[in-house]
Structure formats: structure tokens, C-alpha cells
Length: 337
Image 1: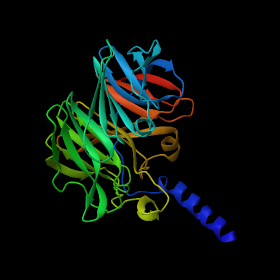
Image 2: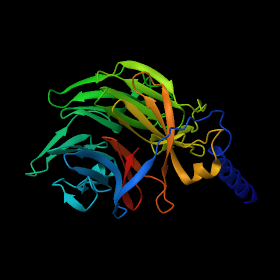
Image 3: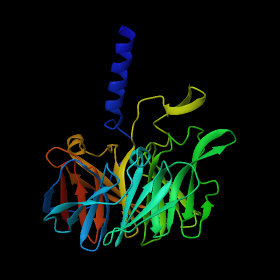
Image 4: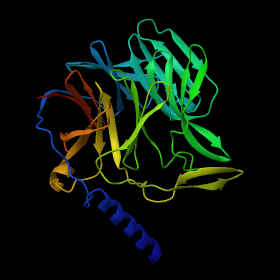
């Protein structure tokens, strides 16, 4: 019992020290000022900004059949109920994309893309063969890129696959993803598509690397963020569950990168690591955003997004020089000066 308590204390202390210790890099802060121009109170059902289309911004909830719609001035919010067949498999893993007049719901455990028309509720289910996918990015109405499971020489990992749902074709990457033989747990991250540069970006959660691909899944470059954390901060292993193997993390989880988004040829990454030249009070109080050019992956500088009622951001999106930040209970619009 005493030994168990000691181990728990060590894990807690180690986890707390991870992001606040000296990390061997400095940040260059941009002379950028955020002016808060609108606040919209919302309940805690909103979990992610799904997209902006027309004069509205849309937010995903834990219910695949329910999205929140707000005007871009953040004067009001309303619920939109979609004619989607509820199921545990769909609700357990899904991603929502907005491309007016359609909303697309990507169900990772089925797998399926559900297309719903905002105006007449017409709904199309596009099921396709393949394994569960854990990440998804939309390139155009019929084309999506997934990070999906693949058995490679008896070991499970994840790879990128592009599917054209209109003609049924699929293209798989060629030796881009790192193979860790742990079902892709240690290499988990976020996948984005930038429609200005027409590039896909994959940002790892647990080390400082990110990957840039074209829309045919050809590698453009692999690079790293400004921090020096090249090794993965998570380890995963398999254990038997009946007759099958299940994978899980085997050490405390330390996120190197948190949320991220892309806009107009730029990557905006919410880092979880403090820089050597950074004030610890500021780092605890604000969310730090590091910016990179998608053209050549060069670091362009950093800025802070303030907390709201002592709560840091959930997700964020930059759109036409404005910054929309979703917090646990509010959506806030900032003007970028």
C-alpha cells in the first residue's frame, strides 16, 4: 500500500513538472494585440468549432445529430437538429465539417460519411469499407483523408488514406507515418487541411514533429516545432482481453502539443511547453500559440490567447483576420491588431 502511494506521488509530481521545467528553447513573441469584441454565452455541450460558412459559425457537440449555430457577430446561438440515425458506434467517434449548404458527419467506428442538407434535411449515407479511423480532414465535398488502422506484418498501426466517396477510389500514403507497432497511440495527433495552400498538416500530440502532405498524400516535408521534445512522451503496449489484444498507454500522458488550426497558409499550434525565456505566470495564465508557415515550415513567432473566467481555450479558429475562441462556457471573438 505504501509503495502504491509513493508511485502515485511520483507520477503526479513528474506530470506537473513536465511542461513547466526548462525545455531548451526560446520563443519570439509577435507584437500582436487581441481586442475582445464579442462574447456569447453557451452551455458546455459545445466541444469544437466545426467551421464557418456564410454568415455563421458552427460548433460540434457530443451528439452527432446536434450542432450549434451562431452568427459571426455572436449575438445569438441556436440548436440545429440533424436527421441522423443515432447509434452508439456513431456517437463514440465522429467529426463534423461544414460546407454550406451541407454538414458532413464522419463516423470513425462505422465507417461512414453522412451528408445533410441544411435547407431541406435531405440526407445521404456514404458507407465505405475499411478500418476505424481516428482522424479526418475534408478536402472537398467528395474527398476526405483519414488516419486509419492497418495491420502491418502482424502489428497494428495507423496510416493516412485518401478516399473519393463519389467514385469509390482510395489512395494510401507511401511510408510517411512512423511505425511504432502500438496501434498508433503514441503517434496520435490532429489532422488539418488548408484550402489556401492545398496542403494537409498532421501535428503530433506527444512529440514536437509535424507532417505536411499534398492532397495525393505525397510527403512535402517533415519538421518539428520550436521545442526540443523529439522523443514521444507516451508509451503504449498491448495486453490480452479475452482472445484479442488491446492497446493502451503504459505511462503518464504528457501532451507536447494541444489544439491547433490552419488558415491562409499558416499553422497555429497551442503548445503545452514553456520556453526558457517565458514567464511562468504568463504561461499558466494564457494559452501560447506558436505560428509556422505551411510553405516551408518556418517558425514565425508566438502570441498569447487569454483565459476566460480562469478557463483556457477548448478550440480556436482564425477567419479573415478574426480569432474565434471556444472556451468551456463561452464563445469569444477577438479582433487581431
